[in-house]
Length: 103
Image (cartoon, rainbow, N blue to C red; front, side):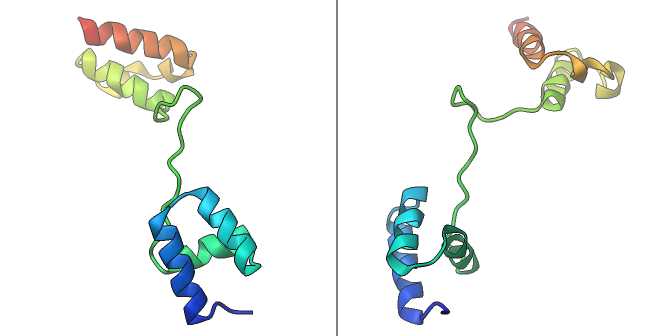
């Protein structure tokens, strides 16, 4: 069964009013489609917004490479001069980056 224009408008309106995963789950049950199908339809209609990933602490995720780049900037160095530093534990890199910010 394809999405009728009425169902399409309904799920667009409902999702736009409350754009969250719970709405997608509810709509999926209401119309008898899988969650992936509803997300796909909302995406094709241009209204679906992917949830932004957060770390366990609620921060935006940052890669080790990004932290090394920050450290390099703080030291006025090229990132290439710090090759291998990205292999250090992430928490250690964060400590170094924060310490350099305070200098």
